[in-house]
Length: 116
Length: 106
Image (cartoon, rainbow over all chains, first blue to last red; front, side):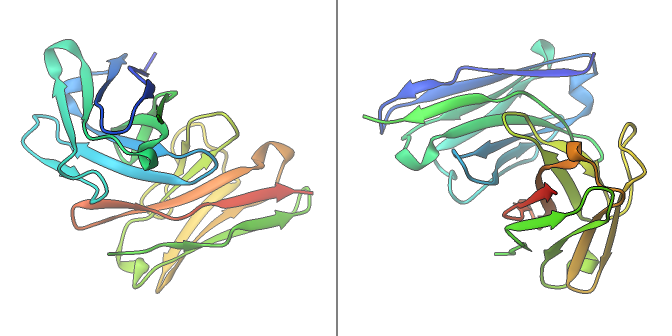
């Protein structure tokens, strides 16, 4: 079964850091680009970051540029999002999504709450 | 930056046709993707590259894209189609989502 499973979310104080992980299974992870997408409570989808299959191409949304770092380990079939200098407005469910013909496979999401 | 505009809500009678629009400057020149999201669940891709349906998506779902408007059409609407629907495009090196449309099936 093709699957993405996020982990690493939780409650964190403003200004602190958190690292999210996304474990892929059921497909050849190294063949696909990947993305992080977030959704604040009661709000719409917001794209966060993209990484190419070999990590040679990386993009970020302006809202996280300079604070978040996307990375991947193809040997471990894993995607990561290092989030530094967290703000209240980063509170959201964070989804990893496979870039096939579109965002064709999504994980179930992990909740990040930034609050003092 | 590029913006996509969606109506906040659309209502459709059971068995009728719902049309959800996504507006953007010359959106017809871009590939548009549509996602369905039910409460508490991750989004699901329902249309890609304007008109194509992934396997497992009913033929009742169709898409079109021209000029400044892309449209997701849901024929013979069912109660199970109630959800939020998001359009999405790539603009240069960024991904843009519309604000989402809540579909209510009456």
